[in-house]
Image (cartoon, rainbow, N blue to C red; front, side, top):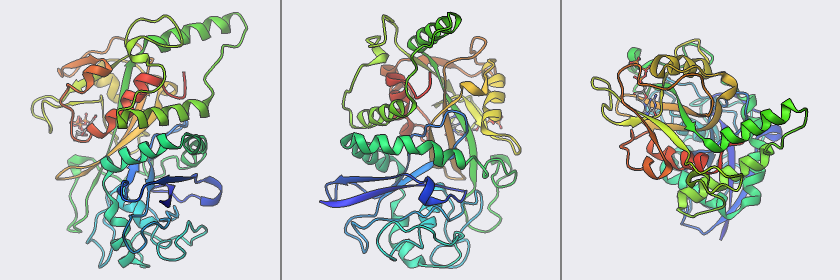
Length: 397
Ligand SMILES: Nc1nc2c([nH]c(=O)n2[C@H]2C[C@H](O)[C@@H](COP(=O)(O)OP(=O)(O)OP(=O)(O)O)O2)c(=O)[nH]1
């Protein structure tokens, strides 16, 4: 067995690694884990955090078994092509590749997680060949996500450590990318400018949960507050770790812990399953007929939360408080004409009754039913995290 180290990095902003980036040492059988860069469940409650990506050095390659350092010093510029292994514009700038590129000054240097790299703008030189030979092979979010979550399952202590430290890293990374109008594109105005690069479309989505367990817990907390007592709340780090393990279980098909989705909650006598709202893409739009999580494009100048609140009002006729949007995970998917990056939130509280306000069909699905819906390609890899949120809740009540 070779030691593998997963290193978190945040695309798009520079983060002092030593102080903020969590490192989790994971061990696994050589060859069973495809190298990869994958979305990883995030946890800070009050800020939007851009994606954490997790990377592992590929086995059997020139640096196989060594740590692939992602310094966090590379800069992701959404919608702009970056250069890898040649002139500018011959590679793409997706979150995954940018994350891989950001680590290029580490690769081959010490074979370990190096820190304090000088800022290496993606495509500015360096060990491009090694980047090309090592890191860029790793872009397979679906397989890697399953592998990573399986690995987390095998090492719950490490999972806890990663989860506990994730908020500080990601909170710091508060969306300089997304808050900077012009760094990303609306699909309507996309063109590649002849660069050969891939345009990034930023969309926000929500897992709207009809969660009787949450409602009951919230009512209990409110009642306790009225009485001037303190209701027990889930400790953030523990709940996050539980979500990571739950995601691992969902990915591997393993059953773990109390299952809230079937009403067998250890929290109480709620006998109703949790349900998630799905929306069907209407005729005339891309992916027509497929099901998705409600949401839409982030307009320039909008925060992700503002965009989501606007979209939910327009599409479903409901009002949502930003404090009720809990980051869950994100989608990173290459469509033929653009690359989709979609932060996905969980929301359990809103005003109004959700309806298909733009004529789209909507449906409440139990965990067992989710798989029977024909989801968009970008959403399929999100299902384990969504099921985990339905079964085990998220870090915040
Ligand atoms: N909202 C949302 N969009 C998704 C999901 N999965 C997925 O591939 N997408 C894609 C489909 C679209 O290409 C894009 C969202 O575009 P959209 O057309 O729905 O956005 P919008 O509501 O702002 O549309 P419009 O008014 O500008 O036409 O993201 C998902 O789960 N939710």
